[in-house]
Structure formats: C-alpha cells, structure tokens
Length: 288
Image 1 (tube, one colour):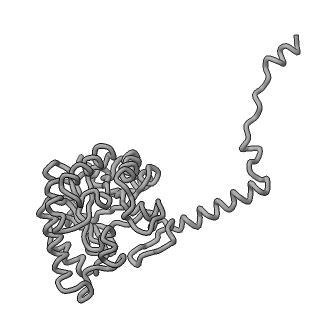
Image 2 (cartoon, helix red, strand yellow; image 1 turned 90 degrees about the vertical axis):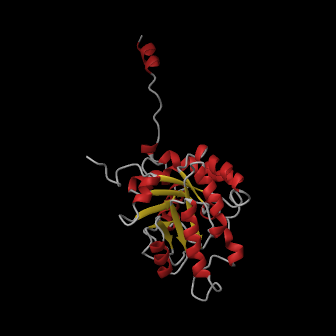
Image 3 (cartoon, rainbow, N blue to C red; image 1 turned 135 degrees about the vertical axis):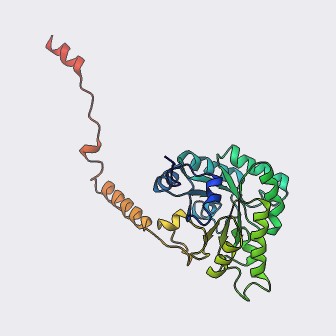
C-alpha cells in the first residue's frame, strides 16, 4: 500500500509534486525540542530561519547572525526531525559575495548542519547563485517580496508590491523575480509581505510551489515563526500572524509559582527528596 504524504519523509520531489495537490506547512524551529514537537504535529518543513537573530538572540533585525550560529541551530533541528524537510536559512553575506562563497557556505549547511536544502533571499539578482547551487545538487528555496536582509534598503519591514507604493514596476519586478528563481532551479519560493492578490498572481504564474508569509491565502503553503504561533514573542506581532496559543503567559505564571514556592519553603516537598541509604551493614554488626 502506498504511503501517504502525511506519513512519508518529506523530500524535495514531494514538495514539488504538491503544487496544486495539497497545501504545504512550514514552521520555524531553532532547537531539537521545538523540532520534535513540530515534526510530531505533522509540519512538512522546518525552517531554521535567520529570524533566530531576533526571536532567540534578541537583535533588532536578522543581519547579525553568523554562518556558524546558523549551522549550530540547524544541527539541533535536524536531530529532532524524523519526517519534516529541514531547511537551512542562509544568513546575510554568506551567499551574496559570490556564487563560489555561496556554494561553500551552503555546502556547510548541508554537510555540517544536516539540512536537506537551503533558503536564500533575492530574485533576479540571485538567479546565477541559485543555478550554481542547484548545479552541485544543493536544493534551493527562494525568497522574494519583503526580504528581511534588505531591511535598510526598504526602510524597515514594509509590505512590498503595493500599487503605487514601491515605485513604478514593483509588482512586475516581483513576478520577474519569481520566474527567474524558477528558471534557475529553485524548487519552491517563499513570498513574504505582499498584497494577497499579488501572492495569488505569482503563485498562478509559476510551476513551483509558493509558501506565503503575509502573502494571502492563495499561495501553495504557509510559513510562520514558531514563537509567534505559540505566543512566545510579545515585542511585535505582525498583522499576518495568528497566535494559536499564549504559552508565554503560561510559562511566566508557572515560573512565578516556582519562585513563590521556593521562597515560601513549599518546594521541594518530601516527595521531591531522596532518602538516606539504609545502613544494612551497621544493623548486622549491632545484632551480633
């Protein structure tokens, strides 16, 4: 009997074949525990995003995270993923300098980090780099629209491709970016921070799956940051985020209870303590 997509190990060909057949799910993960939870929940792809610079390291943007740090976190996620496809995000300046540097760093992400593929930002300007990676059998996911590594050029994390909002031809450039990435060999494309109808237009215009984040419901899949989904991040909640739980509040309340019980000498109780070993030898000597 054939194994269903939900049960089988997710592969690059399986993602490609999903176009028009089923919606894809992607979630960020930064450690083994989160990877295991998401994997057991049925998430198709685990993205070790450079967003860890913000949600894990506490930085204001994604630019500061290093290649070594990304590999470290990717390795942890790979250990926790049995079914999901592990995607290693390429950090700022790890691939933009030259295709040669991109191959070397992406190779490290696969070899040292245990990722099955990499994701990088950019469109037409990155097509040559994507083609070079694909030529050496490193699968690539593209990323267009609001690209966080371009935060300074964009003047912040702003919606892209709005009519009249990003200069003449902005929407057309995003369509050209998507086509260029597909032609270069990208097997999927993340579309971030664009109007919903543009997300649908790009999705219809290309043959590889699109994965939206703030790009409307008509992309081929969705991705969110795990800390947002679980309610662990409270500094900023983007419009496109749906919080499915408020674990941050639950965790804070649990820690408050711990602090109160320690200070009130309630914890540890007798049930949390070890007993002294029985002095069997001493009793025998006393009886003799």
